[in-house]
Length: 282
Image (cartoon, rainbow, N blue to C red; front, top):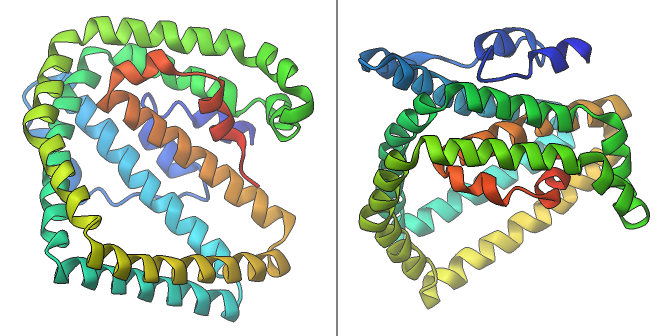
């Protein structure tokens, strides 16, 4: 655990994190990272590498979680059924022209990432400090225990984390100030390209016939997930649950970091709820 805690400064030592944490999981570098070397600006190149490695690490951690869950034949069968239902949903989306909109959205998100490289590059050291602050919260076992008793000990939790929340918000303010010009570029991109497509996609998804077909499959997936939870409760050990919690915690931190790069102003809203989301795994 100590080794894991020391290596969780993801954007400072992400390669080392990938090789030594979570049973030596290694993300596939592939073409994703190769695009970073084409960037002439060293700061943007570093941002590109950090973002792509974080995304790849999330994928690998999620696969690790799935492998832990698939400890019995019954669980594996339920997981397979869930995947089949997801494929069924994708066929429905293809049938109604939704898949093509999702592909367009994915392309725009990749375009947005290129702007985010610049944001990260303009505030590298501050993002490293931000990750240190996230680690300060998520590795605090006392706070984790308090969150589980949030109804009774809410005030004590608040006292334990309020200083770190304030530091995160202060760091966020510095990031916002330091990347203001690029944020204007990001906001213009969202207004002109991403948001119109998202609105079109939402309208298509909520169309009566599409909504009904997707809802049917979603309900089936919920039922399968309930079956899986029941199976896992009978088969997983406390050690398995602890490992899953640790993996999910790392994924959440990576996702929050990516979110703060894609929209630095979100850091100004960081509050106790964000922290409890980091710590409320089984």
